[in-house]
Length: 348
Ligand code: BGC
Image (cartoon, rainbow, N blue to C red; front, side, top):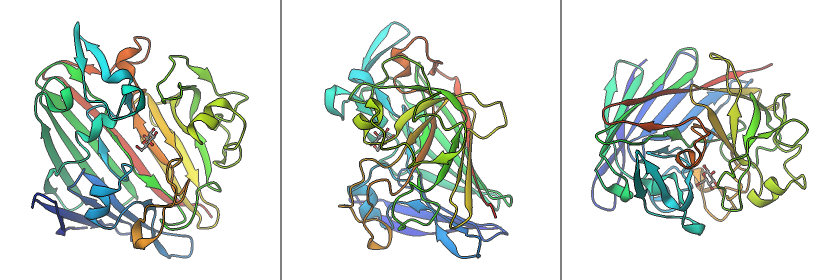
């Protein structure tokens, strides 16, 4: 394998953005760019050997900068929502910038996803991206240095390693926000994809997508993916949570054992499969509910509702405001270390 580097685009302030491309022995190609440490594309063969990019998003920097719904982005320092954009860290009240209704903050208002990272090729199959967010950025306390290592293996795994450290006590919760469509990026919705999620509970939310604090059993509800079923089977149910969020946009509390995938997806026509692995306690299933076809994505094609699904490995949303959730506050110098794997394959 080899990592190829090329020019991707120029930011409005003149900064250059680079693209890195890695192809393995099975013709799987991973592309990443330095803006937002974005997973730009993932080309995989279907059961007939045809290659498609199975990620939904943009093929220009202009799209990523101006129209993004976080497609492919690395999100931190706190992925997902923080209620009223405030929380308490070791006795200090922290008030960060709000970017959503209700004065809430989602995805840390682009702290790590709307910036250009430094990049370095590592060996013949990996790229290391680094970005330091200064103390006070978006209202957070403490400078945070995040290192994200993207690796493509010959057994078709995209491995994303996070190593993040701050110089003051703060919350750390990093994720990747890729929208997958195993039929190929411009192939309509993902409602026919068969999904399994290894979770017995999920965190229902209020109308602003803030967890109420309840851990609700999935059993007997549309949220039970323990037995594989299509994403579309129950998405239209008259369930208050689904109606409010226009589909799945919820954190699942993982009940998997150590090396098991947290989620598995199969698309019957292409035969493609995707397995997601994480060492974090949750995964956000987001079914592209707010895509509405008005924004053009890759190849100039519209991105309609449910065009992709995200499996955002994470700590539960709004964790610092819920003492009962598994916590993610890190002291100065203490490292947030986490690994997410997206493994692609075929099922005959
Ligand atoms: C959130 C959605 C949001 C999407 C894009 C997801 O992680 O849960 O509510 O629309 O990101 O920002």
